[in-house]
Amino acid sequence: MKGDPAPTAAPHERAKKGGLSHTVTPPASSPADSAPRPEQLDHFALQLQGQVGQLVQRLGKEIYPVAARAQHLEGTADVKVDFTKGGQIKEVVIAKTSGHEILDQRAIEMVQAAMLPVPEALKEHSFSVVLPMQFKLRRSDELEHFALQIQRRLGYFVQKLGAQAYPVTAHEQELEGTVNVRINFKKGGQLKQIALAQTSGHEILDQRALELAQAAVLPVPAALKEDSFSVVVPVHFHLRSVLRVSGFYLVLGPYSREVADQHRMAMMSKGYTASVVADQPQLRWKVYVGPFPNRKAADKPRSELAAQSLPAGEILEVR
Image (cartoon, rainbow, N blue to C red; front, top):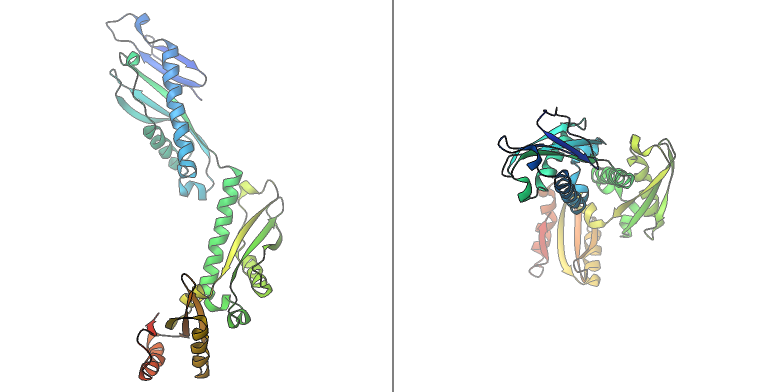
């Protein structure tokens, strides 16, 4: 913890202990020896620092501004708190900047949130304390953030590709699952290997997950280049999510699995593409007919089915 950078006037008593600094101004009508003892000021400053520490521990990663984390900004800001006679806060300002305005502002917010009542023994004088706020990204946080960036990029690719992200054979066989992909990087940030960390149970989905992960790899941030490392990202293959992004669908059901399969085969015999999708809690099933390029095209089979006088509730909607 660092000392108060402000100049110290002659009548002031200054104390510094354990890195905490403070300046005390005795009342003009009182002798200097009536000022609070330095240990009283140290104790209050340590209490404030402890309160800040508890707040940091409680909030965890939330103390780090999102934009600062994304830019890998680090630094220590010294926050100076001025108290008036009577124990009121006069102002909270930066005594020494971290070098980044966004971190300085968060440091002020954290100190303000952690403020404690001034003890009676200190209320007879105006004084100030300086508290350091350190912002340092842990390697584990950097790894987690980097993995999340890759995962989001994967999600973007899957959404952009739509049904093409799903292997045709896997879609026809209605295969689903989640693949955990391990991406290994060398010291210096070069890509070393992309491999399976956990299989989906279907080789065709595993292979497509490796291909998508290869396309989603991002440049390694400087903070992670000091050593080799790996991240694990999940790739989800769910027919429901693919259907949602691929166009308009006519939805039938819910049915038992046996009846849903009968309707799927019937729609396919008419030349339509149809899939059976589990409905929560996965005891009933729906049939998705499509995709169609627009709602009007999806309304055509809807009208055909309506003309067959199917039981009420079987034709749900166009999505």
